[in-house]
Length: 194
Image (cartoon, rainbow, N blue to C red; front, side, top):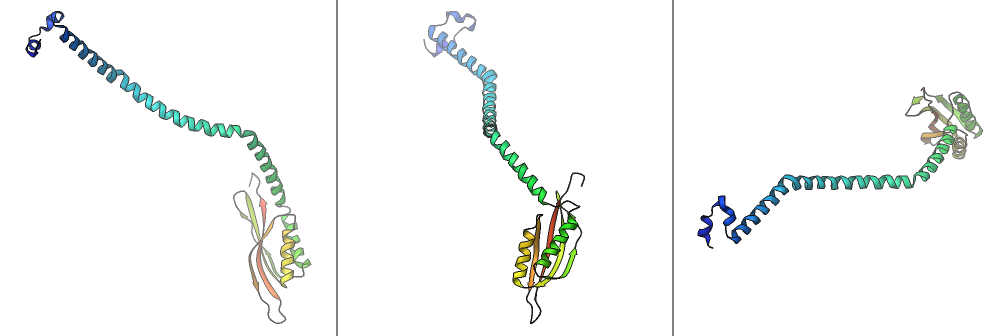
């Protein structure tokens, strides 16, 4: 059979065609059927598979992250309880609104007991922050270097939190002692209504 015979094929009577032509037609139809099946069915499935594999990677990462947290959950609970106790202890070191006048007196007594001469002791207005408020006290005291150190140590030893800020020391001249200007700040925890 040659190419001229292929041109003379009668497609209405394909059953009588030579065997190589029948095999060629069957191979062509199988390829066409496979291509159609791939285009109409398998192509969408492959796209869906790629999306699912990408989603699987994301979910696997989330799972591993949550698994690490779950494994350490008991440690986190213990740590949280320790933090709550520490926070409670720190909150108790902050004076309540009714304790602030006594604390101001304690700061004044600490200055006097340190041997300082108090020139200025002026409590300022309270400033509210996130969960606490600050009460500044402007100080100007006179004395020696060691008395200033004793005063700072005494303020640090008070049972409530008091910090010293903006400290400036001015040297004395002759009989005039050194002068220290500072701002003492005490803090108060704000309750839920505030």
